[in-house]
Amino acid sequence: MIETRGISKFFSVVNENGMAEGLTAVLNVSLTIPDGAIVSMLGPSGCGKSTFLEILAGLQAPTDGEIRIDGNLVLEPLPSTRKEMEDYKRRYRFISPLANGVFTDHPKHDIAMIFQDYAVFPWMTAIQNVVFALKLRAGGNNRSGRAARSEMMDKAVFYLNKVGLAGAENKYPSQLSGGMRQRLALARALSVEPKIILMDEPFAAVDALQREKLQDDLLRLWEDAKAGNAPIIIVMVSHDVQEAVYLSDEVIVFSPGPGGTIRNRIPVAIPRPRARTDPGIVEIQERIFAILQYDINQESMYSI
Image (tube, rainbow, N blue to C red; front, side):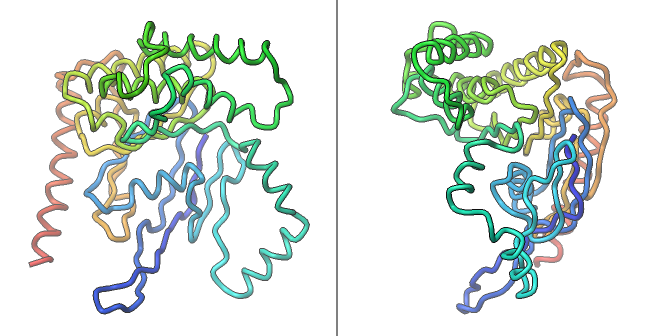
């Protein structure tokens, strides 16, 4: 389970006059996401969706608030005052750089992240990309040699087959289509058997037919994990309302930025498997379109 409590993120930016000023990217976001749920985040560009996703991943520290996964803290807010800095130093004064290195080799949480631009290594073949992820996840594990290598290769082949890349194991990303590269990114994420997958516009770079196929593949893999008693939480940033409603158990709509916060939480209580033309799906889509259109019109009105 993911729990976020009062998450805010502030940045210092330089304006056109060369003066520093504050920018609020995310403001007071609190939510709970149960195990095995798919949640999508929608909102206008600049509303803080991707920043919030990176905070969930532990790639950014929140300015305020905290995130817990299964009750364990992901990252605490960075100190912002002298007193907080002194408390922070006192609390961690016995943690050496060596110890920090050991901690990074053993991630506290089983999280995988998939980006819009695939983020696969172009100089590695498909199977090498997946094996590399498995090596990273193994971290400080002392197992080595042929047995461990063979086990990783077998696992990589299994997940490449699972996402429909059988026969493409030895191809480089440049030899794969956009949809196949995203399948590779998905295979790499699944191979480490995470409890949580975070996705930032994962299917935006592919055509409409490939996008629908990848959506269905993602649901199939998610359902397989659930059937195997290893439910995966999927949290996805999207600009596609139809995609968000079709995939999700809940759609979270962020208010326009700067200072994005949760504007609406809309449950999608429609049984799976779903049809994209289901009247219930279409009704929820139209409701979300109306919310987003209202926000865009209000933003335009105030910017005139």
